[in-house]
Length: 174
Image 1 (cartoon, rainbow, N blue to C red):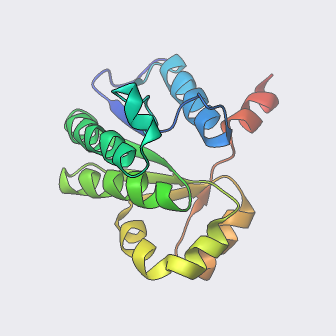
Image 2 (tube, helix red, strand yellow):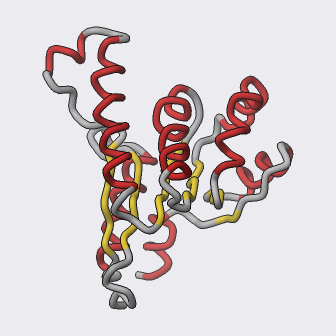
């Protein structure tokens, strides 16, 4: 399929391998498939290598060295795209990476899709919902890969749509 609008740009925010893992692999595969379909994808990586490399050994400080360039990259990307899709999960990753992406997208007037993953959602929501809720409600759409996660979101009064994992979709197409 070719891109029906050559000016259409998608901002994809998520981790990439290394290390390999579910959400990192999903981000990489989604970017590949969107580009294969002729869409323009600008990727903002949540987990780039630390620069300078010695920062990786210093807890706390390393978060600042990753977070500040990440926010700068989000700001720049959000000025060039038509929509942002954030690959999100629970815990500190939600606060450090998903929440800023949602906030910057909204501030810049760019619709934001939260692609939420992870089996720890119920415990995370039960523990921290008052802090999570404001950002969740700012998302234009929330998508999840399973009925399990959709049920958890429903318990907290949030609608979501099921979009299967990219790898599951690839298996069915082969």
